[in-house]
Length: 81
Figure: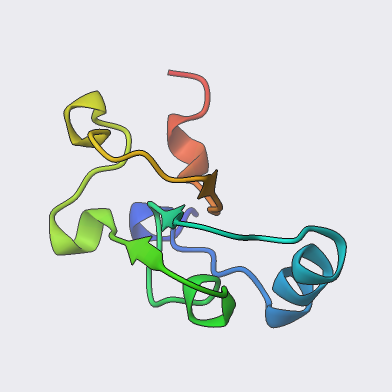
């Protein structure tokens, strides 16, 4: 059985691997932030939101920001819709 709202947090070790291999600068958008398992470790200005807080990242009406990076663990149940 799938967890409600596809809540599968990203482990800290995976975020560390990302940060060792990619130099993130500028504005970072974490659009499916959940409880911040990724975003709390990202450098610089990080914009976060989540469907739990009322921002459904799968809705294109919300994509009115222009980040340099989008880093996320998306809702996999929406992958093939």
